[in-house]
Image (tube, rainbow, N blue to C red):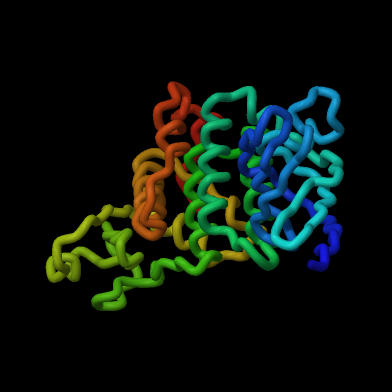
Length: 267
């Protein structure tokens, strides 16, 4: 039988997950720009003297050279671009980063380009590392934008019953991804719903409908931030139909509600 040729691949990527394989090797789950989510063996990476130690750390962003033989990938070499080391020094930020990585493993393509997914992951990690946004705001932006660009776009333009654009309170339905005004809500079959003030709804609209460069360019605090947080998290759980151990880890963190100084509520 003819032996399969080894095909080298060079790409940038973020390590989403690391698993032990035997005494010396690691299996890396990497979000790459050109090839989506790739699993690759880093042979000998548990050896402290290995050249693969730095690029095999969870959340590290590196330029990898993969060798592919059939469906199997191995890491030939790599060069660290950014380690996001500061994220690891804060338990809440680390927990949130692991949740984002787990969600990315669920939704990012396994084959084909993932430019926007990698860009979203890097932007979120950067803001976390620098403390430039509240943790919960980063989380809800990441959740909604990733779902939207993965094909789970909610309909937040207007009430799906009467087409009303705004009301004092609008009601979000995470199962269908729709919103309804107070009048139409009365004629909706009972199902999980989350009330949204206009500040929360405007923020969610901004995240999914604006240009990528502007998705984090707003401020939200108080009840509206809490409403948007609940709505986005519920939408993730409904649409992906799974639970996330990393989300439980984040929620159980004693510091999960801390972040930068309180921000004004506006968009």
